[in-house]
Image 1 (tube, rainbow, N blue to C red):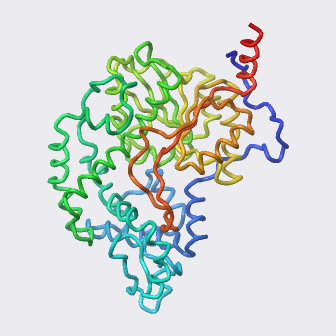
Image 2 (image 1 turned 135 degrees about the horizontal axis):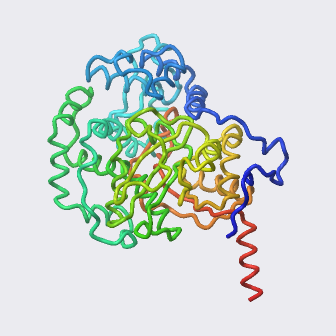
Image 3 (image 1 turned 60 degrees about the vertical axis):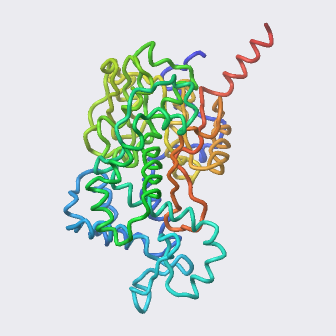
Length: 442
């Protein structure tokens, strides 16, 4: 396909000007705080209070790495886990927070799932017809929320080896786990580790059965590796061969979700996925990228052979393109990936994403987006089709995270899974029609 010239991404679409106007990228975290308050009035204030913060700006400073952990008012492991649990304490039926009750300690947790709370027996009974549909899954959510701490301590993931099967023969997580030598011994080591013991000595909950913990660790391992393996899936879907040349991957719309506490080795599973690969650079680009080990400039040339090199840029993608790519300070991407861009969620987010989506379209950049659910998939596809982007495929992601996640302030809904589905895009839809027309003429 022919490439469009410089500035093509700024061309007007056929949409009304008001609808297509570009705007400063909204802050997704801020929108998340607002959404929580709309479901549970006052919940945002509780979160800030438990983190020893006065405002959302304090929270942003922490996410940007400018506020030390000691400033959160956390002094012990028990204090840390208790403050985290306190942010989930509201009545799932009437939405009241502890401070709105005559006795703030009257909230009681569901004994089955150990996740949702109720202020009275009457509220629990009234909520049961809805809650019973999700209670079993929410038990897994509550368990994984605690065991996730072992990712930050370094116990998860366990060490992995070079893949013994070609990437194309690994159909999903079952195949991936089958390649892990001494898997049970590795899981045993995590369960017997010091931090697992510290966790359950301070979590305020009884330690689950070993089988439940083992399955939780497995789910969190898939959550950790889901992003690099989804990038690998994208390379395969577009026929991009990591063994043929060094590659550059841009992760667009990156935030604290992708970059908080990220280590320079966190995407090394990509190297094990493609033995003999010529080197890959993964550049995290987004306004909410967190300062840390990977906050280093993108490479202007190829990354180290055989290694995965992580770098980042704090800013909007179309600004990054003009400042870094067009000036050849950063390499042009072979693949662009967006994990849960969320542009379907509201008008402000769509406006923030618009210049980036048009750039991806007009420069014909191979692109893969992931979404949380089939509903989000349908909404996102509708927007991308309206923008006349060429959708080359969409399906369930074989490397979706197996960790269930609840809607934070509305727990009695079906849990979602990170990167559960993907969408692949390449250029404008008109280019595909032109190619099909040429084929028909032949």
